[in-house]
Image 1: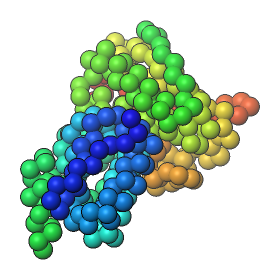
Image 2: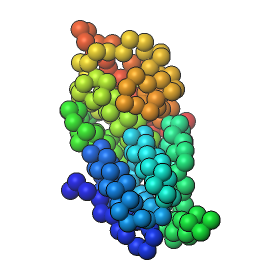
Image 3: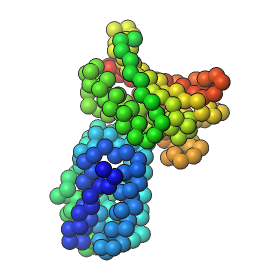
Amino acid sequence: MDRIPILHVGALLLVTIQVDMHDQLATNLQEDLTLRVSETHAKGVLIDISALDIVDSYIARVVGNIAQMSRILDAHTVLVGMRPPVAMTLVEMGVSLDGVSTALNVDKGILLLNKKIDD
Amino acid sequence: MLGAEYVCIKTEDDLLLVRNCVRQLAASLGFGVLDATRVMTAAVELGRNTLIHGEGGHMQAAIIMQRNTKGIRLDFEDTGPGIPDIDLALTDGYTSKNGMGLGLGGAKRLVNELTIVPLAPRGVRVRAISWLDRN
């Protein structure tokens, strides 16, 4: 499996990462999402990482890149479902996830994206 | 030493094996979810360091015991060009290529001990130790 499915719902793209994120998969996701934002004119990207038990600095950087690229293509990115131990580990490691908005779960993430799109 | 595991690190996919190996060791010792997350994350960071900077190598993972405390010891060895300035490499924000500047310095904060020794004729061994009762 070399691709993570991207769902197009209304003005949003939804991605649920449920498999082990090896590096190639992360790079593919970055490319696929950027293309889909451009193709679908999506205004928001929601990435659910509730299934990930660790997030290392590489994956964090990919998420940061996705957020930056989406922003340039006029879309907002919200990261949802981060497990508390993952959040603590990232902070201790010194990963800041600059420019990435977060929400606790998918519901709240969609609310946040819709609010950002309306503003 | 109570048990040892050996994982080759030649491709990015091997980092998943590194993670799973450390996950099993952490579970077998009864690490809590936070400490398990810390040591697994550190292992992946160090494994990636071995892959990118050390041109590949291996991880030797062992359960160790000291003063009635059990711990996980992870030795990452490579035969790459080595690290010219070890103190500098452990400094936050320092990176030489492809990194975020968090690899070694970031991993250091996730474990109890992190040491780097040069190997002859080439390469380094990065040793990380995480104790069961870390505080």
